[in-house]
Length: 119
Length: 252
Image (cartoon, rainbow over all chains, first blue to last red; front, side):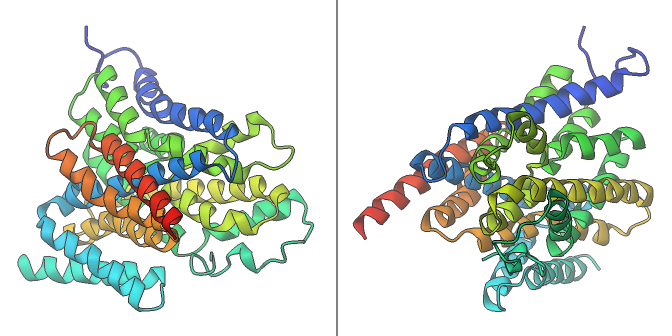
C-alpha cells in the first residue's frame, strides 16, 4: 500500500506526514551540519570549500526559483524574470549597494513588463 | 562590512562590551528588523497563499513554516502533497531540496560557537539556519564577541521565524484576494533578495565564482535531471570555484 498525504489513517496522519517528509527531511541535514562543523577550524581550507559549496547550492536555489517559479509568476516569460532580477542586481551595485534599491528595481521591471505584456 | 545589510547592524556596538545574554538576544531580534526581515515576510506571505491553493489546512501550513523553516523545501513538500506523492517520494524530494542546509550549517558553526556552547544548544540553534538568517549571520557574526554570538543568533532566528509564521497566516487568509500580479510580485521577491544579498555578501573571488557558477550550472544540469540538479550544481560549482580561488590566490 502506498502511503500518501490523503491516506485515511486517522486525524494525526497529516501531522505525521509533515513531520517525516518535512521536519525530519530538512532537520537531519542541519544536525549533520552541526556534527561536521564541530570538526572544522575557522581557518581551515576545508571550511573554505564547504562555504563555496554552500554558496553554489544557494545560487542554484535562486536560479531554480527564477526559472521555475510557482503560482501566477509561472505565467510570465522566463526572460522577463531573468532581466528583472539582473536589473535589480545592477541597480544594487550602481546605487550604493542598498538592498532596498535592488529589490525595488527588480520588482518595478517585473511589474512593468508583466502589465505591458498582459494588459 | 555588515552595515549595508541592516540599519542597526550590531557592528556599531563596541566589540568589547560585556552584555548579559539577554542583551545579545535582543540585539539579534533587532537585526531581524529591516529589509531582509521585510522581504522574508513578504515572500512567506506568498507561501501561505500557495499552500492554501494546494489544499492544505491552515494549522499544518503554519507548522510547516515553523517546523521546516526553509522556503524552497516547504514549496517542494506542498507541491508533492498537491501532486499526491507517496510519503517516500515526498521525503526524498524534500531531502534533496534541503541538502544545502548541511554545508550552510557546517560553515556557520565554527563562527557561532563560543567557548562554552554545548553541542545540544548548537543542535537546537541549527534549526534557524535558512538563507536569510544565514546571510545575515555570515556577515554580522564576526563583528560580535564570541560569548554573545549564540544568543544573538537565537534572537535573530526566533524573530524571523515568529514573523514568518504570522506572514504565512496572513498569506493563507488573503489568498485569492490578491490580484495575480501582486501575488506573483511577492513570490518574485525571494529569489531577487537572495541574489542581491548573496552578491553583496560575496567578497572573495571564491565566493563570487561559486555564486556565478551555481547560478548558471544548476539550470544547465536541470535540463537533464531536475531531481539532483541542485546537488550537482552545488558540489561541482562550489568545488570548481574553490579550486580556481586557490590557484589564483597562490599565483598572486
